[in-house]
Image 1: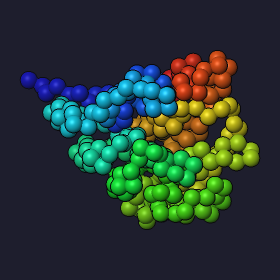
Image 2 (image 1 turned 135 degrees about the vertical axis):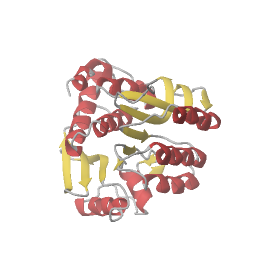
Image 3 (image 1 turned 120 degrees about the vertical axis):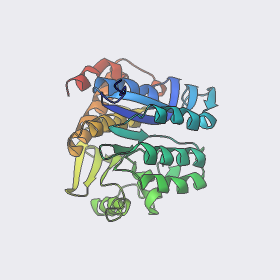
Length: 282
């Protein structure tokens, strides 16, 4: 009897929380990866009624169930074109993710880490310094990193600067790359410039480049998850990194513009569903 294989279609493992309302995390990754012809296989870290940007919410921590959940995937011998993680709420969750990567990664797997820890020079209020230290271990396993400026500074021990020049950003990337021991592809996202929003791109084998697009509207919840989901889909499909950053940044900008047109509340994120067909054409 032929052995059943569950690996005939390209898949990405997404380790993140799930919000029933408010477009972020797994709720974003599922439709975006599907549109990109990649099966999204989700490992929930917590379940929220709605994300933490709202005045109130109900949530259930899923940490105690994660290891048993993952063991069932090992029985199925699942293989992934990409593995990605987003916000992780504790050192224990980070340890679980590190083990997941070591157990499931193979030569065809791209590991994408979005080290969600803080913004505007500060850790998020719910994030502990001890957890940030553990995050440094996790990013050492990444092929691709998508930090914002705050997170890049925390991970490298550099003092945060509001308006860093390219030399400072290059130094951050070189430290994160760690002479080939760290991520070979890095994009520092959401850098404010007079002419728009810049993404600073580093590839170990190509060097540095920048991508700046005009601002299209107000900042919204979940845009980072949209961005990293597209990067993950592109990584699974082996699409050129600079091209994937351009695609992700352009898509986020268009989704923000459409959300403003429909007067979507900022807490509700971006109504990317309105333009999702763009990703089906890749």
